[in-house]
Image (cartoon, rainbow, N blue to C red; front, side, top):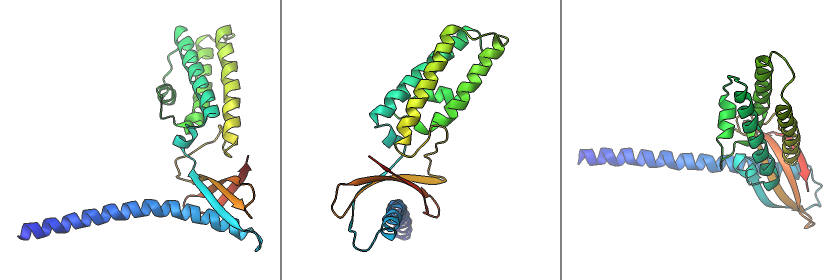
Length: 211
């Protein structure tokens, strides 16, 4: 009987902990959304009605559903793979956990690896230049360099739509958190705005209306 009472007590504590964890997760979302609503209302005149429609956290999963962005990401993945193969064909010894991870992605893309990929791409170019004793790079490799530049430009354009940059992107939520918010003012046509909030203080750091 005593064992049963103790077990029931342990089980109760475990269930309470799970409940509190789920509650904390919901509260995080609620707090971000409440801060966005407060920020909008604070900057509206009293006679303007605000109607929130949709909140969407911007993370890797959300960005992976953007067709325009993913078309460019898949293209640059092929380009990096080709560059790696050309470098290996010239007996370059180059290991990059970032490039290995990026080339191994099929469905769950970590879009916020892009800024690190840019740096690793430069290291790959330098490794080949060093192997060739700083002679001109092969024409086929230079063609891939140009492809990388063009595709990166397209990726950055697609990310800028969400107020993000390919050259500095972090969707981990450690420092800041991004939300897409759709709403109406005075029942007019809906407005969509991207908000960046400080993860700890919830302060709105930046915002951008998108079409």
